[in-house]
Image 1 (cartoon, one colour):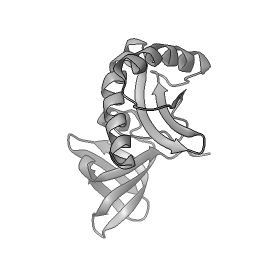
Image 2 (image 1 turned 60 degrees about the vertical axis):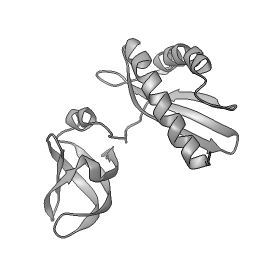
Image 3 (image 1 turned 120 degrees about the vertical axis):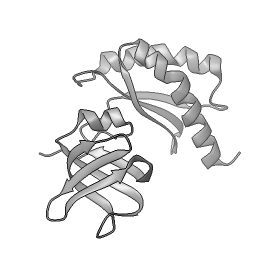
Image 4 (image 1 turned 90 degrees about the vertical axis):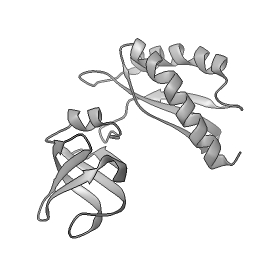
Length: 161
C-alpha cells in the first residue's frame, strides 16, 4: 500500500470509528490527520465543544477514551503517536455544520479548480450563506460567489486580529 493510500485509509477508518467516541465524551471531532513527521507517524485529532474553548482536560479525556479503541480496532498497522488538540483560531471548515456555525465571519476558501465569474480558486471574504449544496462568500470588491461543497479543497476560519 502506498503512503498516500495508507494515509487516506487510516484517516477514513479512524474518523468513522472515533467520531462517535468523541461525541460520547460530549465533544466534536472537527478533523483528523495521519501524517509522517521527522519523529515518525502521528495521528492528530482536532476536537471542539459547544461554545469552543477546548482545554488540556478535554484533550486528555479524549486521548484516554480513544487510545484503547485504536489498539483494539488495529486501524494503524505500525507505530505512531496520538495527539489531541483544539482546532485553533483558524479552524478548518469541513462539514456544512462547521460553515453554519461561522456564518457572518471571515473565511478563506480554496477550490480544486476555477469557480465563478471571473474564475478564481482562492476566496477570502465574509461567509454570507450556507445552502444544501454549498456556501456563499462575499469577497470585497469582487462580489458574492456561490461555491459548491464538492468544489472546496480547503476552507478555514480567517482569524481577524
